[in-house]
Amino acid sequence: MSKAKGLTDLEGCVLGIIRAKGACTPYVVRREFMQSTTPYWSGSAGAIYPLVARLRRRRLLRAVRPTGDLRGGTLYGLTAAGDRALRQWLGPVLEPAVYASHPDPLRTRVSFLALLTPAVRATFVTEAATRIRAHLEDLARAAEAAQACGDRYEFHASRGAYLAGEARLTWLEEMARAMDIPLPGGSTSTS
Amino acid sequence: MSKAKGLTDLEGCVLGIIRAKGACTPYVVRREFMQSTTPYWSGSAGAIYPLVARLRRRRLLRAVRPTGDLRGGTLYGLTAAGDRALRQWLGPVLEPAVYASHPDPLRTRVSFLALLTPAVRATFVTEAATRIRAHLEDLARAAEAAQACGDRYEFHASRGAYLAGEARLTWLEEMARAMDIPLPGGSTSTS
DNA sequence: TCCATCATGTAAACAGTTACATGATTGC
DNA sequence: GCAATCATGTAACTGTTTACATGATGGA
Image 1 (cartoon, each protein chain N blue to C red):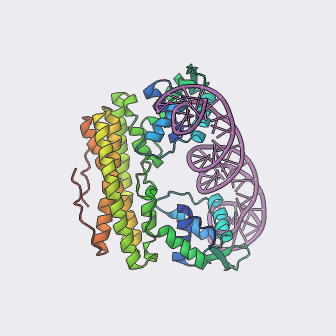
Image 2: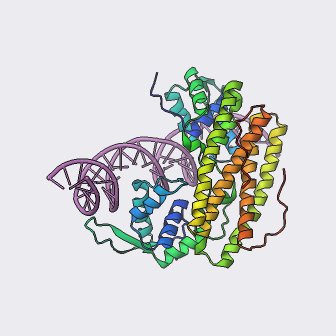
Image 3: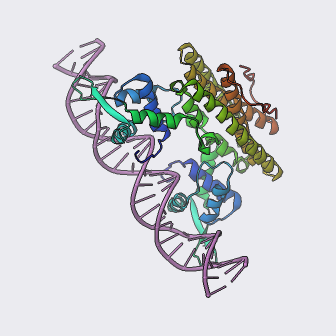
């Protein structure tokens, strides 16, 4: 029984990716983040390589074999402890932080809207609604792609992002109504 | 015209708080974060004091006067440049990051649910739904309080947090349905 | 008076970003 | 064979957290 320290969300994701895809080089993991449609993390080299080294030192990852090419890369796979740590990170969670509200830069700004002039405020709201409406289309497409691509839980995740976006739009429309700001059309989606 | 570097969201919040409340000591700003119902930031001393010092060096805050007691505290207020910087941070925003989807630790975990056994998966979903339903009540109370307390935009912000939470619950219920997991009652709010 | 809490900080650790360096591989 | 890019890292910087130190204040 080692230190029993938990995983960060990024560490959990990395273990999850390696578990789901089989042994990977750090670069393959990076690509997963870089290509993701929900880029919470940049997948920067400076984040991933040290993280993998850290997990290897903690014996949650182990070097499985070299890639074979001349670049000296290594494929990493989960150890039994890594598998346990992943399940514990994933599993029914106790920390309230996971269930609580999350930061939203737009919402943060809204609490200070009183400081703007009515005209700028109106621009703020209409602009935000337009942007979010556009973003929502991306999210819908991503969810569709995830559904087509087979992975059920990947779909649920995208779907969650979509519903969150939809709620934001509803919120902005409600604000606009309360502030007597006309929003340019765009019927609210009813998916 | 100085460096023209933007503000982080925490810096913007600090300027916004000081602007809204009038000249403050750093500790008063800290309390604002510590008491907030949406604790994105801890308001730790190690974050706020250096941040205020930074903003003072950038001439966005200035020392207005000492508090008068023997603890050597100082009240800080916005400079004209600070006011401009605040408005620019706040004002109709261009960066896509403000409009894009945000990290959600629960959603992150959902994309890896395939790794769990059906039983654990079911626990995950029901547990999450219960927790979020509880959290939603806090959010509703906070929104009500904000409405009563007068500040219109503070209310809209709370309301946004509530709607986001509601969307999360809807999402979980949808997942539960798709996975044939019965959720313990609790009619979905229709606020 | 004494003790808990308020208030003002500082120091170290940490996780993630940007930027850089360097060699391998691939497409033309 | 040359240029773009892939792949594997490292280094410096930044912002935030946790933990600590220290004195002031207020209530018992």
